[in-house]
Length: 145
Image (cartoon, rainbow, N blue to C red):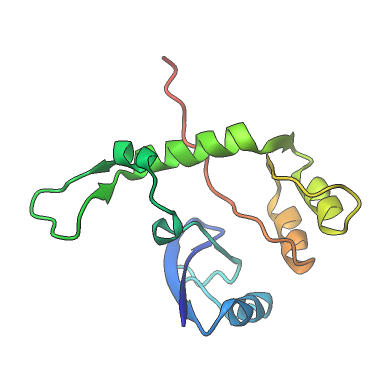
């Protein structure tokens, strides 16, 4: 069994358990996974804190919670900023051409590379139908100072 952190297109996060990655993809393609809050079947995997390998940099993102016997807890805002900065520094920004570029990479028209950008709900549905995996997450608002 494997547990995935999932999110519907309305932003509700929840956990799903699957026999394996293939079972998840099959259930996702056939709209068998539904958000427990709004019943939306447009569901994607999101990064799980359990899947992030610990590094010395994580020490700056954690704080020991009083009485917490499970060890340090990651500050979600700091983690979101760190992920956002990593994506900004390591992914090519293709802007509103995200879906088009992702499809070209998927079908071998362009060389594989990490890209970021924006897309419409319709474009995201096309990407899912074509089997293009992507992760959608909100970009934290930057402090103007």
